[in-house]
Image 1 (cartoon, rainbow, N blue to C red):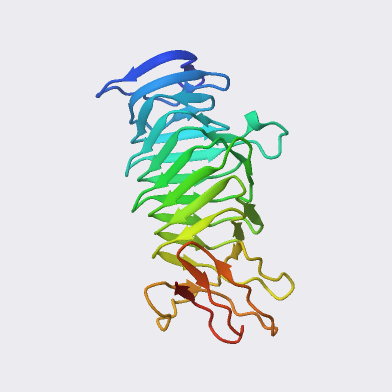
Image 2: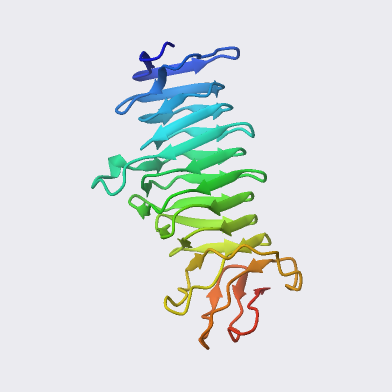
Length: 265
């Protein structure tokens, strides 16, 4: 596909048979307004998904999605990359990323920009998979909460603000790693084993019971009990830490001058 040219899949059902390939600097994929049922594996590095995707498909190359709608079963292979971007506060659910089907990630999903809206879909981040949030955009609830299961790494690496994840519930047995800004989980959250890396809010912004903030970079505290590791910044003022209760554990309420820890129930 030559530079400046495009090959758009507008409608119908497509099959990507083994051995197929798209090459060149041109654009190919599903355009905005397109609606495709796709079967097979995307192996190339410049597939655009700006419309609606149904079917059972896999990504073993790179998919770039802009306000995409995932209505089928999409799997990101261990060597695959899904880059998600989109519009910010554009006033309509259609200008957001939506998952109404199932998205399973064994590779890398980069949330680069744009808002998400829930459609009652399922997101599974397998062991070894990485979901990297690199923006401060919101995740709104519109048509039923999305269900997330994390056995890999859910990481926030960019943005100084807060990602309000109102459109999802999270069940994690892997790592939740907040390196920048804050992640807010207003809905149900469950932690079984795994690892948390976050910090308490500063005294000028008291810690919310559903919000985790980025911790300063330092070595893990090997004195933490059990197999849960929590890295956190200690507040300077004498303020209480509110209990954070989940299905399988809680943050123990302790004096802030002592190291708070994750205690299994």
